[in-house]
Figure 1 (cartoon, rainbow, N blue to C red):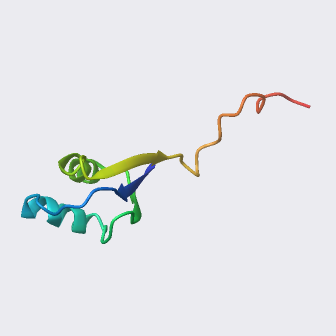
Figure 2 (cartoon, helix red, strand yellow; figure 1 turned 90 degrees about the vertical axis):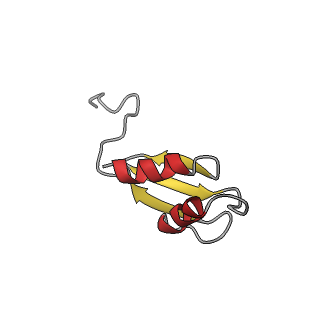
Length: 75
């Protein structure tokens, strides 16, 4: 399962209480704080709700083999 790196970029001051609660539920406490979550529909929905306050980066799977050119070459 892939991971999502979520960074809290913009203050939630002036936004609705439920958006502030969503930021807290994601585990974000201060501006520029970063959390890593599994990529699930629940987390995606929370990110969608506060997409204007956060930035998201998809992290590569550690379990999946890396796609590097030349890896399949035999020596």
